[in-house]
Amino acid sequence: MKKSNLVIVYHRQPYEEVVEDGKTVYRENSSPNGIVPTLKSFFGEVEQAAWVAWKQVDPKDKKTFERVVRMKDSYGEYNVSRLPLTAHQVRSFYHVTSKEALWPILHSFPEKYNYDPVDWETFREVNWLFAEAAVQEAAEGAVIWVHDYNLWLVPLYVKQFRPDVKVAFFHHTPFPEPSMFNILPWRAEIIESLLHCDLVGFHIPRYAMNFVSTARSLKKVEILEEIDVEDGLSPHGMALSVPKVATRIGYEGREIAVDAFPVGTNVGFIDELCASEKTHEREKAIKETLNDRKFIISVGRSDYTKGTRDMLLAFERLLGRRPELMEKVQLLVTSVAANSGMTVYRNVQREIEQIAGRINGKYSTLAWQPLVLFTQAIPFDELVAYYRCADICWITPLRDGLNLVAKEYIAARGDLKSGALVLSEFTGAAIELPTAIMANPYSNRNMDAAIDQAIDMPAEEQTDRLAAMLEKVRLYDSVHWAQHTVERFRGIPADPRYGMKGVAA
Image 1 (cartoon, one colour):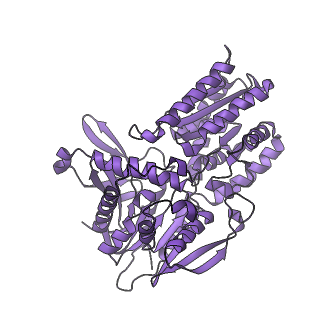
Image 2 (cartoon, one colour):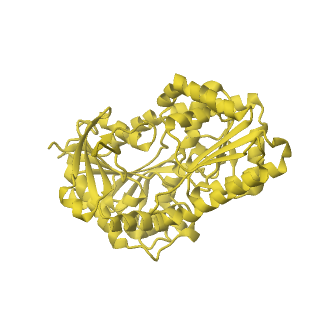
Image 3 (tube, one colour):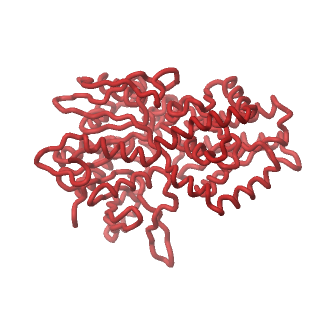
């Protein structure tokens, strides 16, 4: 089988797996919005592409398990190489090490960090399997593009297998400052692996500079090039601002490119949904249930980093502080429950449900329930209709790598020219969207002032703020991110022995 010029390595499979008439069928993702479809859009840039993911498989089924499947959808034809991981491997690698040890440090929650149950050998083993599968799919001189922190060790293993390939890495999470990152006992091993990349990418300059500072604290790393951060990424004045960003660093005779460019949303697709008759019908149905109440929406999942607890407490204070809002405001919260194996989030979900129940028990009337809590995800085409009905979008994580929900809301409200976005200062998206109402979720007073400002904002101010944000969201959309990333791939110095068909010159 023909080898691939681009191999994307990401833990999720690039399709929806369903059973029809007793047979497993692989369907294209129902929504082209989100990170998986965005990554699949790169398949059009190369002659041949592949994707590496994992799937939990019972050991007794491994002999009959189909390791590589050939997919054909609107993005083209490509291989999907699937690692058959056991339940033990999945729990150790993903649920324990990734979520209980690495995730809290990345998001600067050292009090949530749990080192004791970590089996680092299994984490290494799974990363090795990912690397092994990736190089088997890669043509000579190909780009292997690795995604996210649970695959930190893959670059080093890939280079050991195949020094001819180019390795790019993209972090979808925050990257903390050295004093936080260096809590990890495996810090030197992780950084050594990342320094075997040809390109390391982050959403925003602050995360890129945290990575460079961490690398320099552990290794003899030199900054080769540093540039001013562009105005569109708020070089000054924001919680996550930084005035300069390194673009090239050196280590042991190698040069590593560093990139900071936030992922965008699929604005074109959202525009299509907004114009559809089905969306208009849903909008009408939603508005009929609201009875002219001011509608607030908050979309997230059950994770202590998402700040849902603090947002609900702020809403409870709002109802207590402003009795004139009784029966005149409605909050819809989605807090999607984590996988049943993710024990670290059970208490988070339980507390969110308790607070929601308390609010409704305290303030509901026969004609009004102030809060609706969904613990299942709303399909994206329906969610767009909710965005279009929402006067306010309230997104206040305690820490977030980017947050595409904020951008989706802005895109969905564009033609309406109204709506207020309350956004945490500690989301990566905040530096792109400085005209949002900035909130500090660590401060009750600040959160209270932010939601008051959103509720009371005059229509003209809403229009002006939304227009400024929409300009950014449309300019830096998913297409622009893809184009930028392909250019960075092409900028990776090529080994003259190998060609990079369709990716690099």
